[in-house]
Image 1 (tube, rainbow, N blue to C red):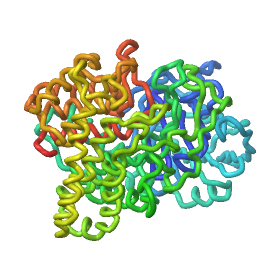
Image 2: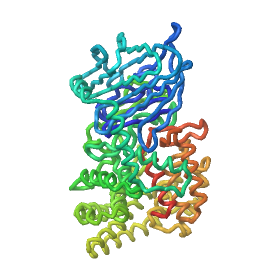
Image 3: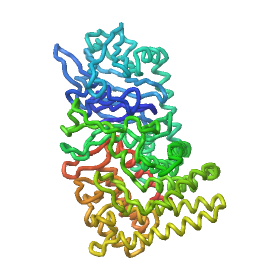
Image 4: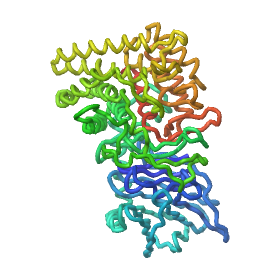
Length: 586
């Protein structure tokens, strides 16, 4: 398992073996330079080994922890009788990755830094240049430089240090598009100043969060870690949030269910904006909403594409299959880009309007809705005229479009919450018209989306499958949790999709899905079953997160392992929302 560090532009994965196993440069969505997390042989990494008595040995697994309320990662490993503590962090807004090695103990030893570069997804061979205490590796568009203030011996792509403890070795990785950018960045770096600045940055951010001390220390830790992860997944120059910083970590190991999540999904951005404003992170929530409103099309469907690049365009979204990496657990193919970009998803407008409504309610920012009401009006008017159309649904099935109940429900949410926002700016005419149309959607869903045979709302009018996405009906309050149709639907969904106290999305899925599991927790809260809700939240924290508090997309109950891209933004944001709903917000 890995710890993640990031700087608002890209991120790195550090393993319990103190190896750097994932890094895309210069941005989240750039090609990998190191990707051993996907291919242990050909992915590339920066690893540590040690030599004593003529034998060279790899590092054994260590203990990892984050410095409290920060994203500064510490990995402690024992080498013989010596202790090596690696402190890894990426200063916010700087193209730097620091690794500070602190060595203590009684024995002299040789320490090796082994650099195995595999740029462009292992499709390019880098040029290498060595200096007195640095190595620079580059291909067109990608470059890294690893340097130190100590005096190593350098042989090929290995740095070797003769260590007499106690000793501190600062290692600096700078990156850019060219070697010159790397050298320029390195000249400005000071590890003591960067370390203190990074600690202050993260603690200042964490201090803005509404505390949840009513809960156990363990849940409070996962809550704070979720907020820190969400911040790490935001591409700071634009305000886009990634679904996950990785590609092709499989939902089912060994199968073809591997997707590139290094894009901003409109839905995930809206969900994350909701979680952040509930937690008191008003500036970050507003930044996400600014991005979502900025990318809305001024003609036709406001959100014609479910996902966009972190710049807000379609660059890099075309799906390509790679044969240069074997994939995690030999799960082929490794994909870059995502074919879901071509799908029509009718819930997106409703997700954004609901997020705007929640922001208006909890942020205290009374000017935001009036400033953006022109955009809001266009989005809701589009929904009023197009909600009867078929789409691909929330789970992005690669099949013909249908009338998905979740999509209809979110169209209802766009009109209902749009009406509330219209009243905020004294547009009673719009509010009446939109509420009239929302009533029509509710009647249509009840008439066509209900399965009397299964005593449950269907996945789609044309598909009677059990599907957790219909939990949107009570979550959006289209029907109350006390409604007989909702009560029997929740029971049917729980009976048929429940697994280990959590919830799958649909029957064909082998593992528990975090998004749907936490939706169920929120429905239980609405039903007044707080104990049941808290049990689901605790199970999600226990099963689907790493020891460091990083939530995966899914949990494989059979093999007892995290699956899917990690860390997953919608797992973290839904955990934050569940905590606040548990404390009385909704």
